[in-house]
Amino acid sequence: MTEFFSGLPKARFEGRTGDNDFAFRHYDPDLVLMGKPMRDHLRFAVAYWHSFAWPGGDPFGGQTFERPWFGDTMDHARLKADVAFEMFDILGAPYFCFHDADVRPEGGSFAEDSARLDEITDYFGPKMEETGVKLLWGTANLFSNRRYMAGAATNPDPDVFAYAAATIKTCMDATMKLGGENYVLWGGREGYETLLNTDLARERQQAGRMLQMVVEYKHRIGFQGTILIEPKPQEPTKHQYDYDVATVYSFLREFGLEDEVKVNIEQGHAILAGHSFEHEIAMAASMGIFGSIDMNRNDYQSGWDTDQFPNNIPEVALAYYEILRAGGLGTGGTNFDAKLRRQSLEPADLILAHIGAMDVCAAALKIAVAMIEDGGLEKRRAQRYAGWDGSDFLERDLAALYDHVMAVGLNPAPRSGRQEALENYVNRFAG
Ligand code: XUL
Ligand code: CO
Image (cartoon, rainbow, N blue to C red; front, side):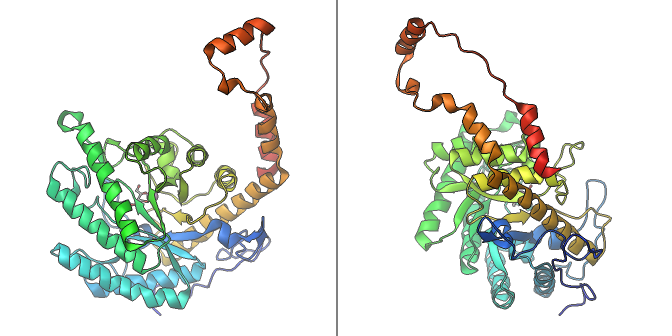
């Protein structure tokens, strides 16, 4: 055991009446809802990067956190892993997610970085075995190092493309070795800063070919997990190619990958794209590409990706409602891609942030389950489209529909969309 979390208790479910900040009030992992335990509905994951690699900086100042594992040796990386697995255990978090750059220090060469990734993931193996904590997804950090400043797959320099491809291979190998259930690609710098120096058609071809290579390699090594793209409209680049779910879907179709790749939808990214989280989930489900979620919240006033822990129960309830309608998370999960505020210095802050977030999701899930079980929204939705039952209008053509309108003297009567009634209905459960 390390000293870092010493004195902090293991988080347990104590119900709504207690006064223990370190207990769950809603997250009761064994509680069965719609035939499966809450743990399996929510599939919580801790994001290694925000909790263990982020130093607390912002554009105006650097590090505020002092962590004993900050440093660039493999001893630091092992201490970081020790603390991370202690936190997973304290929280009872069943999964974690990582980038290569979060878990091992960068060395002087590609070969050294790969060897270090191998070494640290070998160090994870027994810890995963011992704690039962599993890998939700692995990913490659193709955005922090300056070599990627003009993109990874979409870089104007083919050598950077090759370097990125080789790096993805090592991260897919590591994910497979650890039994990861998904592999994520977030195009952090796959976009442009200025159109004046950018060849859009060429960059899209490069991105499409890289993703095809990822899928080819998945099949070559027999990786059973799901390949996920994480849409985001901008930040760090002015414009990113994976703008939102609908954009990603059309990109997947252009490269014949719509049956191979799904999306990992992040709440904050949805907001940046001008959508709600539930919109993006529902859109993905309607296209058959819903995969997983990165759970956080953005500050609605600041207009950038603040990656805060979620705390708005009714809002999150609508997201889980769409997830349940989509058939649940499948191989995906609820990854807390969220970071502390930079004044939250204490080890306890890390624990309390996650306990609160897990509780928000659990409370939201209960609301979503109640709405699904009641069936009121789906009944009302079905009523709204009932006129289409048995209709053959989609099989006719313009001239046939013209004849029909003329023959019966058609004059459709508008009907209420009942938005306020529906919002009132939701608040019966969420209020
Ligand atoms: C960035 C972001 C990433 C991805 C993984 O906004 O969300 O952390 O989740 O690269
Ligand atoms: Co994310």
